[in-house]
Length: 403
Image 1 (cartoon, rainbow, N blue to C red):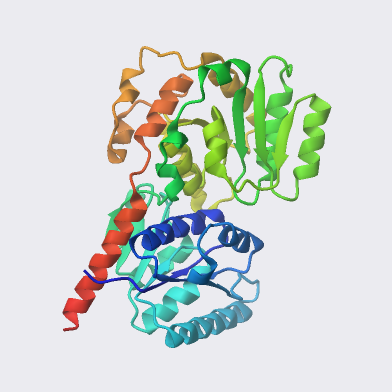
Image 2 (image 1 turned 90 degrees about the horizontal axis):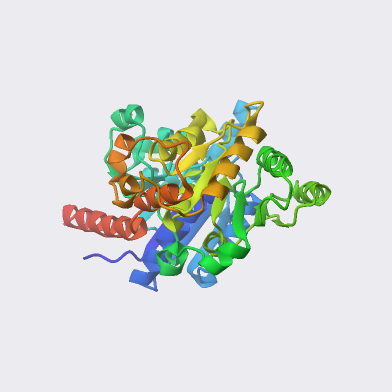
């Protein structure tokens, strides 16, 4: 079988774009530690931070910031696109990648287009049920698209190139058994871990709804151990809000070790980006989801509703006037039910194929134990390994066709 000596990853702008790429990169290095990796990302600070803390060996990848951003001036935006494509082509001419992987986001457009113009095979990673705009534009250039959560039926019909459902690629740490372990009874008797995730850059609306919901109760009602990721803009205001409510919380701008925090948590409040949901499912944690109302084509709401239909999560729409009250009601129910089995527990104990999830009754009032079991049944297998295997097969086919 052919070896993958040089792989370029194009895209970025958020953890949702880069973390699956890092998972695939880890798997590539596990197969062959000499594989050269090239990351061509956006120039956002979050991209630099995620790559710098990824654990990938620094000598194995180059970070190439692209001056590609949306712009109110169409001519300026078009010029930036052309300039970025030319920049990427020059990189590829100096050292031609075996395959270019498009990660989504506007930063993927230049690299994928340059690869296609250069005759380099292209594959896309799409994690959401509703595909992003960049991948919609680029889908005709790709040999294959690997999907995370099942692609919306309407878009699947429009995809003219092969679509392979593999699940969301997760970092290798999520294959560790400790991630799926349940907090011990001793730990649970003293404190209940509540993890709040607003996405890689935080979310002001999530922050305000969560603090409001928790403030509606006497802090002594729940013995909570709260870890709250706020993003850089809201860290001080959230800390002050917790202090004024008499609630103790560990407030952080960004959480580098999400797996460790998921292990320590009992319940998660989160946005519903595809990667975050896959990590929550892999950890087997119940969750209350607040989808980003301004996400493109409401893809976060579609992601969240998919988990809700499987009984693995509850959903609160952030723009509802009673969102804090509804969140508080979900928290009261889930923190009170503990892990006692329910009469419907057997419905969730048997692992269920993700494509059949819709036949499971949605359970807005399910116990936490039922939601945890449903989440585990949705946890992706080793998607990164499946992608790497497919990439090797693709290079084999290309090599044989050129003989």
